[in-house]
Length: 115
Length: 110
Image 1 (cartoon, chains in turn brown, green):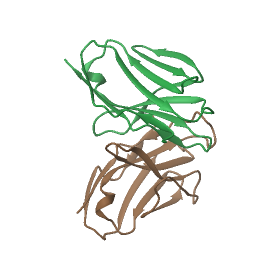
Image 2 (cartoon, one colour):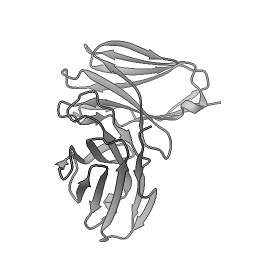
Image 3 (cartoon, chains in turn blue, green):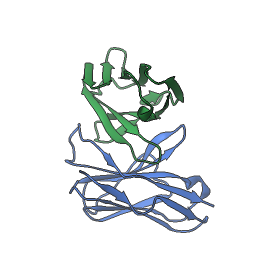
Image 4 (tube, chains in turn blue, purple):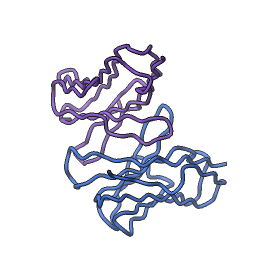
């Protein structure tokens, strides 16, 4: 079974802190994604990566950065956390870059509260 | 106009009811259509996918695509309390990204 793990299930941070969210997948997938999920807005793509050291902006990249130093690990960084970044963060991975029917496999999510 | 629209609900039905969940989309070039299910405090997982028009059945679940109306549906027969979850439609774009609907929260009451 594909397993996507996220470093924390719940996080509480203060405004202005630098926040790291880690995601690891164990199936040698090429693609990895970071989403945030908010009530009424659904899943919104923040960043994605098709390969090591490669990143692409999604629909809402402002205030975020990412790092992919190893194929299995994709990190989301909030450089200076703000209250409007309080959300559920979901990581996903998928195999075979460029295949239309690729299935994304999701981690359990990290619920971040910024005070 | 959003590329994929889905009524967020919530939708509450009694056990045994037939449930209909729906999405509309704007781009007639879309070919593949997916449904994800997300239980509370979990990540989404793929439930079903279909290609082009027509129906696809898997147990109590049927996915239906009407490309002429740009309308996709997920039907659940004999709904169970264990079907209570958020259901998200998703469509792969031509860039390889998935476009998600807002998700419909379903509660099946015993």
